[in-house]
Image (tube, rainbow, N blue to C red):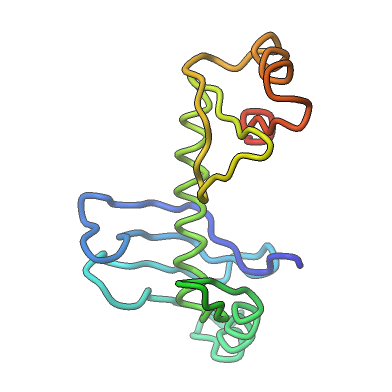
Length: 155
């Protein structure tokens, strides 16, 4: 399923984050900027501002994006539910934050997963060394060709 909703230009203010993540981001629909999303970090819903071609708030676009968000799900305590537009934007923020963190970690470390071992979301084994082809070959020799090396797939 293609991702029609995206965020870019994410700025997180961790020092302001209390109950929720304080952030601002540009909101995109089918690759085109359509508005802004933000949260002040004190709890509550995200602020979503969608502007149509006229420069005014676009209710039809909001409804269309909400329907798209509902096609994505989240799971908590074994229950799977459809996202609202608000919760989906929060998920995108979380995903972008994790991606940024992992990219930073991969600059100086080699992150990998061993086949057959169970991992939580975002969890990897870590070799505290720069990634290299020699290290890649060693990991394959130790854990088999199905070892997943995050450094090879993260941009």
